Image (cartoon, rainbow, N blue to C red; front, side, top):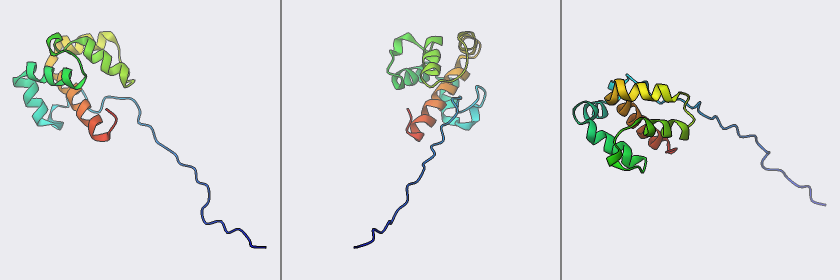
Length: 111
């Protein structure tokens, strides 16, 4: 009779899930100066980049709907009123935040 040799033990793998939050704050412009400059001097171009990233029509423009759609897709807390205020009171900041978040999620492989 040959004894059976166990060469590996069962292991438990714990996967940490990220909390669903924006990757950067609304006014965290200098965390990505390229996005910040594009958002400041060519808001329309950045809006088209974000729309393309999200498979949306560039002609619709950077809207509250795109921000809300993105927030909902990734479970980011917020409200339609918050999206409305961000887009209407500081469009370039809202777009920059959205583009930075898209870039960071692409780098993590979750976009």
